[in-house]
Image 1 (cartoon, rainbow, N blue to C red):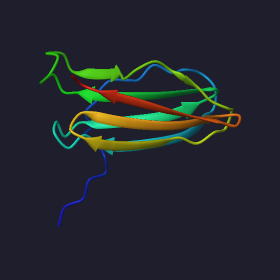
Image 2: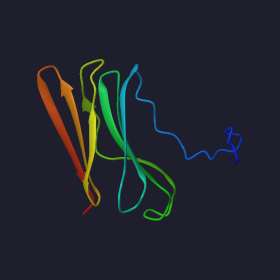
Image 3: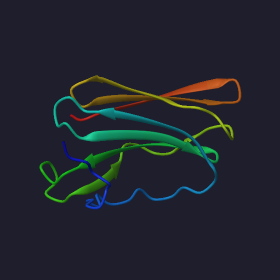
Image 4: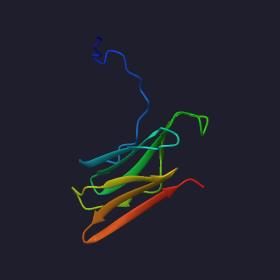
Length: 105
């Protein structure tokens, strides 16, 4: 039996802070690349990001998938991996729901 007290970690880079209080976070794994996709709403913005270990772009780091989406303060978001390289984020602004679809051509 072994235990891990997080004494060894690997920094995989940072996502740019959009400002405001963090409202919600959703995480998924792309089934093809096995890389994490994260969506979050912070303040009045929702964003979707994917980590690349360097196998696709040659440089490891986080890449934003699409532009920020305006949301109400405190709104929750949803995230789904539809199929290979297709990600869907849902968010709400007032009485409108936005659906952001990102796919790699």
